Length: 361
Image 1 (cartoon, rainbow, N blue to C red):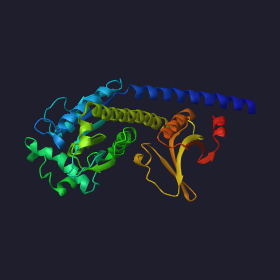
Image 2 (image 1 turned 90 degrees about the vertical axis):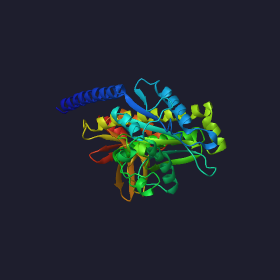
Image 3 (image 1 turned 30 degrees about the vertical axis):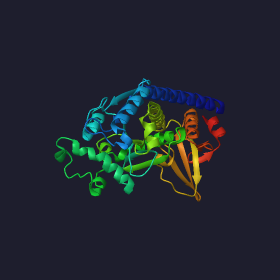
Image 4 (image 1 turned 45 degrees about the horizontal axis):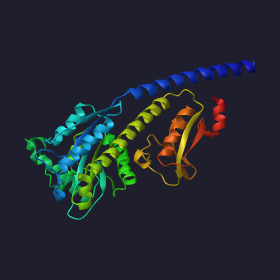
């Protein structure tokens, strides 16, 4: 009798595993086929030259970099690229966001160059937010000033004053639900600038850029560097410099897309409870500090679980009943810098050995 029951359990487990395998395979296939729409926005244009540090034109550099980013991304079959402008024309700020919204874009990236009265230098990336210091406010005011060049701006931006701190800070967060994803792509871009190109790191910051406020998807604004700095201005005005910056933006965008695909598959699988008693997950961190489980606190990893054990908090990623999927999650966690991450197994809320868990399945 016991032998027959054991045999039935083995058959049942195999059937359930086969169903899970089919489901996971279908999920991966579906999300692999999804076309990700990326809108690239070259700042300024036409009657709006942007900043003219050292005689260089921001509008020209932004356009050349945007076109190079697009050329890189078009190599991927699962990416569709849309430009807000492909030539030296003036595009209203509201229209740039409108283009992305109508295209149902998955990501919006606006490209600019910075300026300053000092010899400041370095690349920075911005997401929409109310947090920001006085220096960030000045950048936002300069970029938002293009509003005054638009036809009928008084009605479209009623009460807005590009030189007023109250107007800038008073802008609402229309895409607050996309903040995590915006921070994730911003971090990838900024890390590429900093660690691959060795540009001075001006970090990821939050502020109120009107062009970001108009979008309803994850959005970032990239400041490639300072045209007012002679050395950096020459670099950004050169074909070589533009190519290098564009390559790293494109690389970050495609890595972001790959992360979104994997996260989506993991979400699909973990929403289905095929094996109630056994679950695998990746422990990425442990400590006494209680950290918000936002992706920007965990190097872009989403769906982090926080569990309190005694006086410590443990942070887990990639929860799934599939050991193979969690192995992929482990590889991703390690690639993000969590070199000491490892897989744990849980049965009915209690931690068990991974070896024992695999035997059960």
